[in-house]
Image (cartoon, rainbow, N blue to C red; front, side):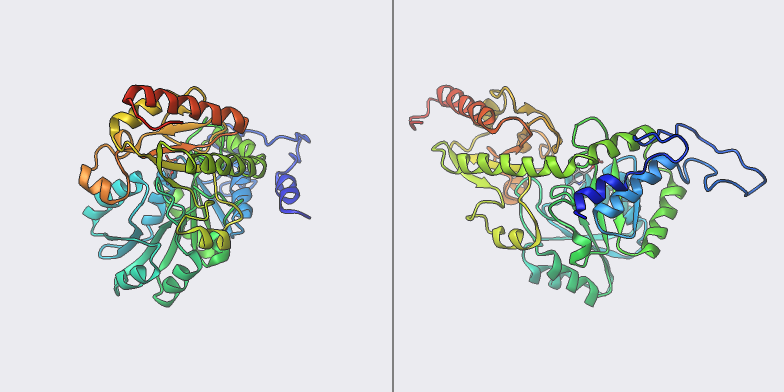
Length: 390
Ligand SMILES: *Cc1c(COP(=O)(O)O)cnc(C)c1O
C-alpha cells in the first residue's frame, strides 16, 4: 500500500456512529464508572480522542513512535527544552526561526541553559561547537529565509557519538519531503500552522519522537505544563493533513517554476531555492529530501529597503503577510518585518539583505503567479527609474 493510501485510511471511521470524518470531542471531562475506572480518558488536558487521533496520524507521517500536539509551534519547541536541566548547552543552527531564538535567549538562558549558534551547513562547525555539556543539537533545514541546507544524517552521527539529543524543526520541508527520524534524528517538531495545516486558519505545533520512551517524557510535559491543542483545531489539522501530499507536490512544482523565472530576471540579484543547481545545498537536498519545498527568497539588484517595499506592495496574488505554507501565495520583506528588531549589520551578516524578499508559493496557477511578479517588477522599475530593460 502506498503511503498516501495508508495515511488516508489511518484516519479512523468512528466506531460508535460510522462517521467518516473524525468527531470533535468538545468536552473537558469524561464520566467514570468508579474512581480510576474509565474508557481510557479522564480529563481532556491529559487526553482527548480528537487530539489523540491527530497525534497518531502525525507519528505515522514522520515514521516515529509517538506524536504530541501543542497549541503552537513554539509550545512544541518549549516542551523539548524542558527535557534539559540547569547548566546544559544547546548547539543550534545560526539561521534559526526568530521565535525559537527569542525562546532560547530570553526565556531559557535565565534558567541557566546556554546556546551556541553555528552555521550547521558546515558539519565540522557543529562538531567543533560540541562540549561535554552539550545535551541538544537543534536544526532547521531548509532555513528561513535564506534556505540553507544542512546534512541531517551527518549531524545525527555527531549527536549520537556525543550522546546528545538531536531535534529537527521540519516545518519548511514537511514530512512529505523529508523524514529526519529516518536519517537519525531523535525528535522532529513542526509549526503545524504552516504546511501541515496548510490553509492559514489555525496555530498548532506537533512533536514526533523516534522512541516511545522519549515520547512519554514529552507527553509528561504536555500534561504538566498544559499547552495542548484544542479538539476543534485538532480536527482542522487532521483535515489539512488529508491533502498534505497533494498540496506539497504542487507547492514544489510551482516554486521551481518561479525560482527559475527569478533566476533569469534582469532586476534580480540572487535567488535562494534548493531546487536550483546553483544553490550550494542542492546536492544534499536532493539526497535527503524528495523535493525542494514551496519557499523561494530573492534579492534585487537595487539592494535597498525602498525597492523591496515597492515590490511587496505591488503584487495582487502574493499577499503581504508573515507566515507561510498556506494555499494562498504570500510574500514578506524580512528586513522590514520578521527581522526588523535585529541590528542592520547583524542582519546583513546573516545573509538577510536589505532587499531580500521571501515568497511562500501557493497553489494558484503558476502562470498567474508569474504575471503577478512580472507586473510588480514593472512597477518597481517605474518607481526607481531603473534603466535595466525587461
Ligand atoms: C512559524 C515557525 C515556528 C513557530 O511556530 P508557531 O506555530 O508560529 O508557534 C517554528 N519554526 C519555524 C521554522 C516556523 O516557521
